[in-house]
Image (cartoon, rainbow, N blue to C red; front, side):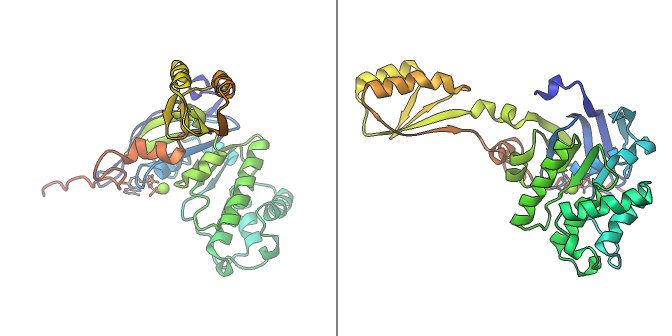
Length: 323
Ligand SMILES: Nc1ncnc2c1ncn2[C@@H]1O[C@H](COP(=O)(O)OP(=O)(O)OP(=O)(O)O)[C@@H](O)[C@H]1O
Ligand SMILES: [Mg+2]
């Protein structure tokens, strides 16, 4: 589904601007629609404005300008926050609380009834694999264990949207795999998951759609398939050199030949079949056929990282005004 066709958007904002005291323009007119029930990824280099945007939606930071809605209510509506979960970047919870206590404490803050909070906390401790550690203090946890509790506390109020700002920060590969499973589970439960992350390979595996942000603006937005569509191609590996007759025929199908590899820019595997028929009829041995797409990382670098020296670096500080 194209984002442009989204009718049921849980987040629909326009022209959001934020200028921090000191002059940094963190957001310079951000418009964004996030479809309900999707895993949505917000990507961007350091200082792009990702966390600022999330904090505005969570009412932690006040926008300089903001039009739009979250869950059908104007951004800034406090009551809506009880329907939202949040794992902040570099989240810290009191070290003297046990994992289980953190979940109950956050549930209490979110207005969850005590009996529900006890039940939900137990369920979530199991989901994030922390039940054995539930009665130990946060101070005794590793970084990744804290992050698992951080993920669980973001879900304790049964949210419709959950914002996760760099959720896999400090989490080992096994933990990341488990976290991906948790995110997919949230999606299956009908929740919308909004993830800020630098780990492009991971987002590629789980996100239905992404937006790439650079210097306070959204520069690309769509499903991963849409964004990487142009570079989608099929490569056919063949054995041995091809004769001029078959090469001529292949050219008419838009096939490029390079060493032992034929390349075709097509969106549909069906268009490749006549080429395979040609090759087989000419007794050519096919060694492989692969669908190749630009990775999210390549797309990201093309969008924000390939603009010469200084690109994809933290934004420049505004010049100091003369006293
Ligand atoms: N409280 C603040 N006061 C002043 N400037 C801020 C504040 N918070 C963020 N900024 C600035 O706003 C810009 C955007 O920061 P933000 O944290 O939103 O970026 P980000 O995309 O989340 O980056 P990262 O990937 O490093 O987490 C940066 O230039 C940052 O220095
Ligand atoms: Mg951030």
